[in-house]
Image (tube, rainbow, N blue to C red):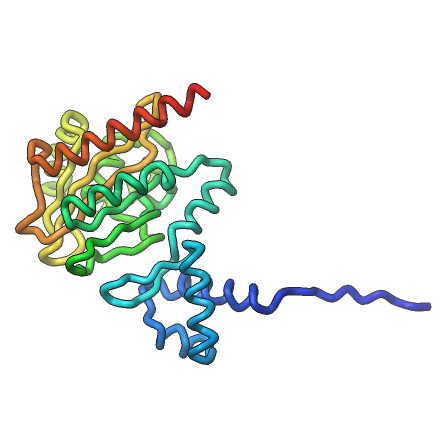
Length: 257
């Protein structure tokens, strides 16, 4: 009697590409070409081809200042699609690029997740590179300007569980300060933080709301503390807030079709 043996047939080149993505996800920090080569034992020419292809499709991102690689925004888009969620990225990217071009500051897009605000896109400033203490796929803490915005506007129960865990690490003084920042953010739609993650690097964030005024993300601007606006009244703050309102208008129109 003949038996049929089922064999797993795979495409080797695809498997190699997926292995590179898994390495970048596992290491949880930007990796340079030599780091990836050591971890994959690939030749320089082959690895270059794979990294170039993955970059072209947005699956990985190479920081032009450090030449280090991280996971790309396309993976977040695919993840959102798998969850049945519409991605903000295609709508927001043109605005993020305009902000970076005008301000020469690094801009992040963060979206909700059960573990806190998740960075889904980064546009780095061209003229200088700074260590912002985060990359695509990083969850931002409650103590960041993005965290304050999410706490002020997010209504999802899962996010509230994240907030409770984060708040448990605050002392009484920090709790009082945070509550004051949260209440102010609800009024001015703007939160700023001085050096929340990295010394000399500060940020401010504005919420992105949908047609029912529910939080669907946040735009965060990152830069050197001495030059970054700390008030919504600053021209740069007003510039970013105007884009947030414009994005909401686009989402309102899309919801009608």
